[in-house]
Length: 289
Image 1: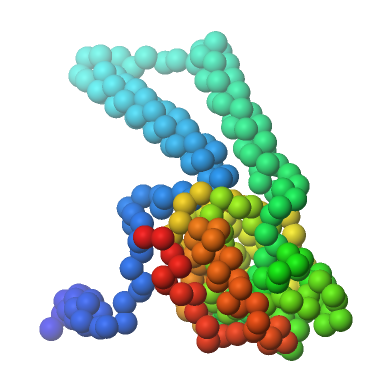
Image 2: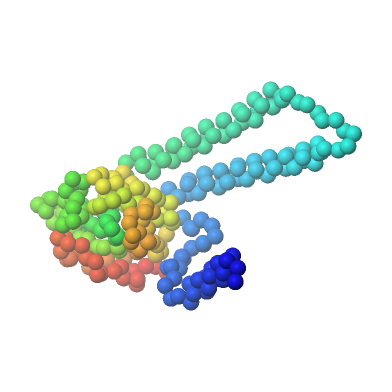
């Protein structure tokens, strides 16, 4: 049997076995062919600039290739027709250089303004503080208790026995509670994230939130915030290759009504804060269908 044919047969056989295997990836709830639906307050501007760039590049590509094909046909080599030698046109060169410059400047200014709103704007005073610390291969999450205050995170104190780098004597953290790979955010309420890493570089990534933030060990990122505008179940994924178990590093993230969040928080508030609860998932009944 020829070698190429054997390779082809092997690929077909492996593909067939993969289809029969029960170990499939989690089914995505939103479109797999286009952008997932946006549920974050900041996502509207991000989607706008995405579609704007898509249309600009799309129209430009069609125009350029149309002109190129036209010239290839019109000025093709033909017997008895001499070639035309051109030294260019300065006016045209100025035009097709100036227009893209102004387009790129406009996109840069608009994009910088949106980045400022998302990263440099101070979160609202009523924002819910939530600490998320990545590790190989999962997510440690810490919530404030009834006092609404989260214990202060110190990057230098983050370690195996203290994933959040908090002072056990910090009065603000006495009523905090923790979860593992399970996150609940209230609907239409700002959430201020305190992001960190225990070991290697991780990345907080939720496509439906249009939110991505690298988490480097030794730092606490306290300038990332969001406001979810729709309920649902989503997936928090690590978008940095962080080791052999990177493929399974994802957490369940639910956006629920404020009342449902309060009920969930009260049920968790009695849990001890000394260790992360890795066995108490988010009740599916909390999520509005």
